[in-house]
Length: 258
Ligand SMILES: *Cc1c(COP(=O)(O)O)cnc(C)c1O
Image 1 (cartoon, protein in one colour):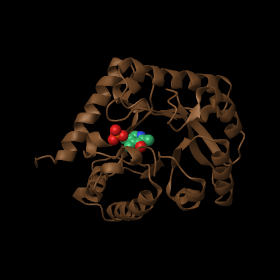
Image 2: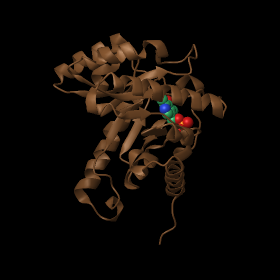
Image 3: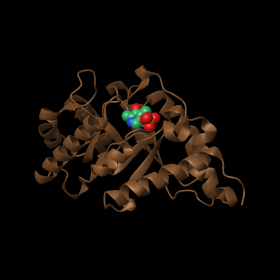
Image 4: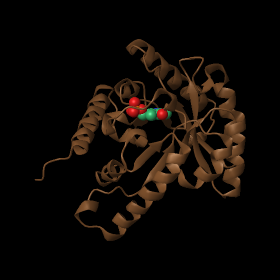
């Protein structure tokens, strides 16, 4: 057996920790999907993580997403076509998730590239996405971002406005609301972090109870490198993990922004 690369070792560690957190929460590991957030990744690391079987990639910056999707999608298509040892673990599909704040004037270029957007946080953005998705003849999967910790600086719909906005998004013909996304306070202690996730899950349950989104309402996108185990305990189905896999550090102003 060839020696594992540093990224392969890290990925194994993360997968083991996800499995352990699922076992502890009495959940099936298949309920939880890891999205590799490419914010701090070098291009060769993105290609490698794909070859290691990760098919869900996340980006928070529009321009970077455009550049990377162009390169990575082409690499993926080539690997699929030619096969061989390096393509053994290739995922069946490659999906890009837009996880950062999206300005309305950037919708058009990213829409064809993304499988899902996690950061819908206003009626105006939802309406504009709906209009662009209609032109593209698409039903776009979206998550609504909630500011569950109610930090003033933070993106996301206020807790009190979440259900009414979800209801409005639920009526839009070309958007499919599939769940909620949240970010816990970055410097929060365990209790604060768990509260933010629990609050998001309660809102999710309430929205489901109102039958908004129907059977599609099934995702909770929460949990990052330093809090994903708490997120799994609180019901996360989509984890967004960057630095734990790729290392590096992202400047503060880039968090969730483009
Ligand atoms: C950067 C980013 C992540 C990944 O964070 P890490 O701490 O590097 O795992 C997840 N979600 C969003 C919205 C991000 O901007």
